[in-house]
Length: 173
Image (cartoon, rainbow, N blue to C red; front, side, top):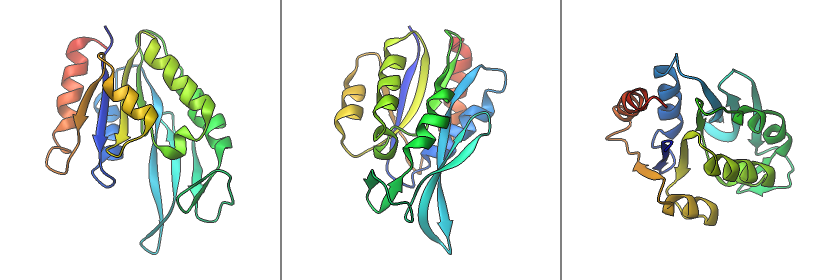
């Protein structure tokens, strides 16, 4: 049975940092996926960038993007999901897929949601981040019997990537 873990945390809890540290701690593992990070101008968040684990990067959302869709004050460029996020989810049975995050911006692109459903139906290891707030898609994933939900907090965010890396290495997935 593949390992399937959702790292649940509030905004600013360190979800992106945890996924990036986990990927760095698994240099010999076959991994795929992406991370997202805030774009700040003069200390104010103005958008989010998406970066694949292979290093491709693009602006996913920005206050200056017109949308649609719009998530809060951000227009989302769904072409980034098509061009970078979807192709980054390639896998084999030995791959560990790392996704940061399964959030409203990412899930605004229906083919991405379908790809995530397919991943969870396949025999592949997954570690993904999700917000603590409720959402129909992520709530359904959290209720799955084959998914472990780990709460990421400021108190455990530094130690959690190392613990997960050790666990994943010992499981061989």
